[in-house]
Image (cartoon, rainbow, N blue to C red; front, side, top):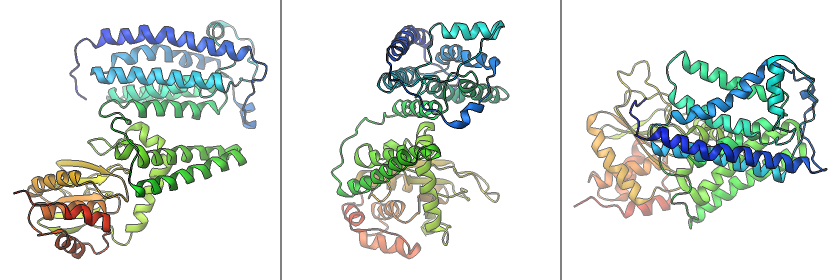
Length: 442
């Protein structure tokens, strides 16, 4: 964790709180009053929820989110991180309040009268909260954002485990205080994760540089994922009950379709250390599991990387790093989570991501950058160039390196050398056209 902080962050955080606090109470109260004035407000309750216990003491963790909300503004270390945290909280509020107005729901359980400290806290809560404002739970949406902020900055034990334990208790408390029905929790978590995805802590925002693709193959792949999302939605709407969990893969596939049609590889939010952002990991969870299984099925007979020449290896994203001094990764959709193998003397000293969409040829400029980095790093020891399978994107990058470095005279010779080392590579006509435009720098 970097101990340095930009100056003026406390003042900036106070300013954000002064803006967000009144806006929260105003918008939340208006939505509550609007729903209270309607006669057609329904509810969505599962049968098993009638067995949900009422634990009055959990009103304390429930209320504690207000304190943690304010404390979260003490943690950011840059203006950008501060502003994006505040914008994520603001976005969660706007999304949830809009849902409260468009699709109001009512909590159906009658809470018995309580006395003592817990009863006073419940009475205080009921002073401004009515049994509306249910799905998505704004409490859970804000919790997801605040929890992520604390998890990012609280690294020392036992404080880290204490943070996770208390945050988990806050999430449970929305049920055990009889404030929310279950459907409000996953929908609230979804709202919070979407806001975190919209406002990542650093780097480019998802929509910056976004444009509708003109690549017919990207549109075709996007349509496949969109069709899959539609199937999941129809199944969830028709079967209901536990089948509503199909809305998670629906969201996952929709986001992948959006990446192919508009956002590009940046929509997967792969960081410089090879990890996907927390939001992308959760939102894309079903897709990531499928993509990982697909990669392992296609490569289970040939999991090992192959040396092309001069210590440059080509292969899939490894489960373990093996004894490589550096890794160049062209996979956008899967995180690089490999650890050193038991026989490795060291982990890679250099990790370089050049994210490219699956099944799409890398652009020429990115191939030049990847080739230049391969040339710089391979002299330091064995180097792995990888993607999900090690057959297409990474093979294209190695071929580009062979051309740009002058080891091969043209694209045909480079492809032949790569194919000799790893016969299963898939370089189609589009890949070959990009490679043919590469030349060794004069």
